[in-house]
Length: 239
Ligand SMILES: [Zn+2]
Image 1 (tube, rainbow, N blue to C red):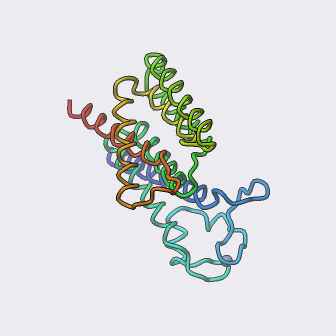
Image 2 (image 1 turned 90 degrees about the vertical axis):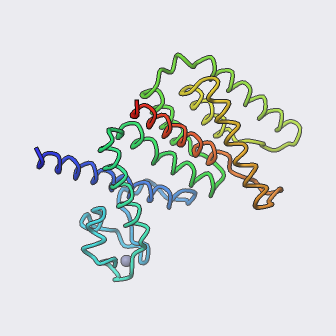
Image 3 (image 1 turned 135 degrees about the vertical axis):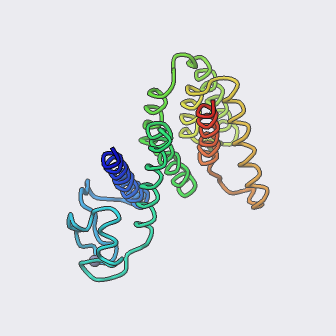
């Protein structure tokens, strides 16, 4: 029994490490122009194509003692951290029986937050991923009306702002994000969520005194959503 458990944990950890490696790669290349689909990664220093043995999460880094095999330059520790980070996160989720809920949701939320903070946009593919996760983990038809109402309200805000100020007040990515979250929560939770995330964003603007800059809203939405889910999961497991 112990052996099967250990093997299961190792598999789960390995999958987490692969996902960590993939997400970091997606984040690093985001916003950069790439020609065609590259299946293989290249070296950060000399651009040489990496071999399969250089691509094994965690192990390659340790075996190569943190240096590249092609040009013998030191590799960024971000690879090791993201791989070990998601490997241990996946194993903890597996231990608490939360791999399909929290384990498959939080890495996507983190990536949305990081990309939104950096590029002020939410990639459509992540929004679609979130909608898929929500339709698998909740009764979507139950909150359909709330989602339509929230969508109409946000779209009128979006167009109103665009009409009056000739610029986007909130992004369409944020609208999609909030509509999908209202499919998950419905009223009144979605109201609390919008209020809390707006307050957090306002607080950030006031603290940093950056009143004229463009600020990411999506990152605050996913942060609040993540905290809601955590509370819900711990409440469910406590009862
Ligand atoms: Zn190299």
